[in-house]
Image 1: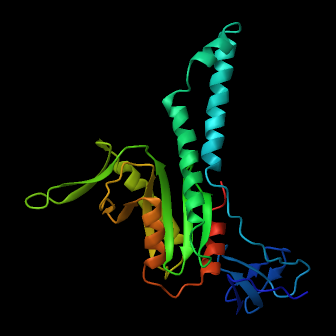
Image 2: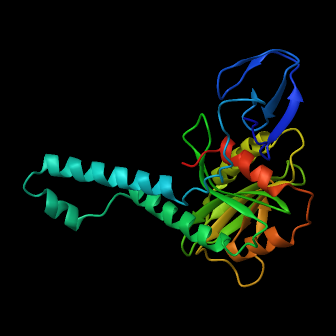
Image 3: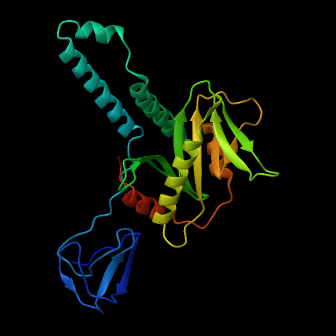
Length: 270
């Protein structure tokens, strides 16, 4: 049976011997085969296996954060009920989860709210939610692929707190940029997005399209005029302006569906 080529496949004559990753058949050097760029594997031209075109899993925004919140909440409840068999229920009723646990619930809500806002993008965009970064415990909240490039977006929900750019140096000392949130240093969030940006760019191959890193703050105390800025190349912005920037940036020559499939494979749903 002749296999159908997918958007990320290339039919080629093998320079080196290989093995079909579908049926395990040995493929000699010089054999016609299909090279899958996303997984860097080969498969037979004629094979008893079939390849189905499967739409990449979009993922569920906030899923991993909500699972972590539920895990921590249940562990705390179990500890309290074990330590206080008679009063455990009362203690739980009169006390709140610690801030470290509540932060996971807040994070999940932020991701869910931003995912809802990203539905305002035109249908020329594809969006992936809550993606694992292989080899780490970290995840990427949202990856949007469209005619203007690839947007790596970290959602943050800091209610009524103002993000601000703080600059030091520039004359005698080297200029340094810092993110402050409600007066507190939040620069580590910039470093997190930069790491995500590097991983996504690497997954896109040797000639990637423009890739943008974004910290998107929901329900923050943004000023009436201005407010958005960049810190070390990372955009700090709110949802409505983010959508505007994503759709109005200079269009590129991009195969959106191919990049969507490639990134979905490189960063599985969490």
